[in-house]
Length: 170
Image (cartoon, rainbow, N blue to C red; front, top):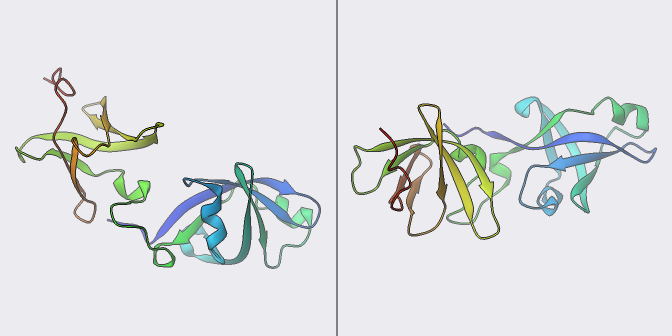
């Protein structure tokens, strides 16, 4: 089931003495957070009015009501969330959090289940799914010839595996 509030970063420190906060973004680019005026703590329970700007590989953020370093320091280690309704992804794009836990099934033989997605990581050319079954991890490249269909709403990813990818499974 898709979560309404998605993790987008972690507060890792302060910046300056006026309460600005350093955020480690969990997105493709630090620019992503600059589109939001509202972020959340505690999976949506606490609303924050924010202004974010990218700075190298992090995000510098000001929070309404936080105007000194002492108040900002108290937020270190907190996880930030966005509301799913505040963003529309392009067709074919998914939040990694939505992919984690999806079953990976053979497109041609639906009765063959290869495991569940336990992680997604980026390479230079394409993403790679870590598919876990019985404690064993398999790396599945996210390319059109392998990943045939993604049905994240039903929690199923259909693939046509490359020769040898799952051959050692017994």
